Image 1 (cartoon, rainbow, N blue to C red):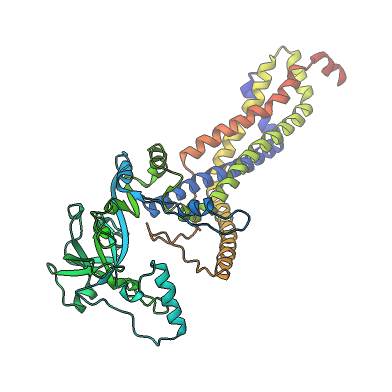
Image 2: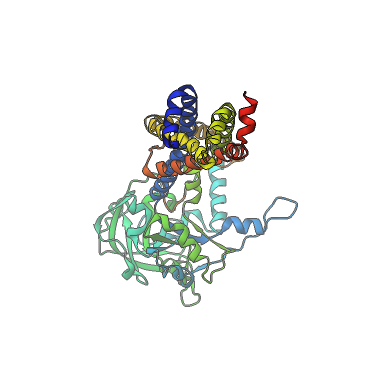
Length: 489
C-alpha cells in the first residue's frame, strides 16, 4: 500500500484528530489572512490620502528651524530671527527635476490705495482696546500707519495655479488671469467688489503707493476681475483695509518689490516668499524631496512642505492599525508553527506502534514523513477553502474596530493638544496655505482579499507545515522498529 493511500485512510479513520488539525489551520489562516488584508487596505488608504492632499510641494524659509537655532539657552526664549531670503535662481533649480509638472512663485506685501478707495470693514465704536490693537498692528507692519495699509498685493507667476483658483474659492469674472508673460509687467487682477466700488473695468489704470512712503507711487493696469467667496470675520480686531479679502490684488511676483523699495537700488524683485511645485503624481513626492535635497540649496534654512502634517494626521490611525496587523501576522505564524509542532509530536507518539510496524515491514522513513506531510497539506487546502468564506468578513470587522479605536485615541490626543494651545493664547487654526484640505483622520478602510493575499498566506501556511514537521521528523528518524514492537508485546 503506498503512502498516499495510507494518508487518505488515516485521515478517514482518525477523523477526530483530522478535525482538530483542520480547525487549528482555519483559525491560523483566518488570522493571517485578516492581518495581510488589513495591511494592504491601509497601504491603499495611505495612497488615496496622498492623492487627496494633492501633488503640491512648497519651498520656503524654515521658521521653526530658525526659532530653534536662535532660542535663548536656559531661558526658553527666542533671539532675533534673521529671515533668509529665497532667491528666484535657487527656486528655479527645483523646476528642472523630472517629476515637476508646473510651478509657481509667490510673494506678498501691502500697499496704499492712491487713486481709488479700498473697501473697509463696517464702522465700529472706537475704544481704547481698538486703539491699542491698531498700535500693535502698526508695530507688526514695521511701524507703518494702519490707516495706510489699504490693499494686499499677492504676487504670483501663474494665477491659475494658485490654490484659491484651483479650489474655486476665487473665480475669474472678466478679462484674464495673470500668466508667465505678465512677469516684469504692471498688469494686475482685482476683486469684483473693489471694481464695482470704484467703477473700474478691465483696461483701466489705477495707482498704489508704498505704505512707508506715500510719494512712492506705482501705476498698475487691470487685465482681469475675479470674485472671491472668502468672507471677513467681523469679530476680527483688525481695522486696516488689507485685511478685507475684497482688497486683495493679484500682481506678478516681480511687482511687489516696486512698492517696497526702488528696484534700481536692490535686487528685491529676485526674492520670493515661497515656490510651489506641482508634481506629475502625488506618489512622487518622496522622490522629489530626495532629488531636491541633492541640489545646492541651504537646507538648514529652507524646507520642503507637502502637507506632511496633514498627511500624518490623516494616516496616523491607519498606520497604527497596519503596525498591529503586521505584528499579528508574525505572532500568529510563529505561534501556529509551535502549536502544529506540539500537535504532531503528540500524534506521532500516539502512532508509534503503527510507524514501528511499517518500518519493520521495510517502509522507508522518508515515506512515513511524506505521509504526515500529505495529511497536513490536504487538511491545509481544505482549511484554505473554508477560510475563503470567513476571512473577508472577519478582516473587515477587525479592521474597522481597530481603526475606530485608533481614531478615538488620536482625537483625544489632538483635542488635548489644541486645548492646551488655546489655553496658551493660540487659536489652533493651523491650516496649510498650500492646499486647504481638512486633515481629518481616515476613519474607514475597505478590506478585501486579493490573489496577492492568497499567495502570501499559502506560502506562510506551507512554511508552518514544514517547520512543524521538523521536530516530529527527528523522532521518526530515530525510531527503532525492534524496540517499538518488543515494548508493545
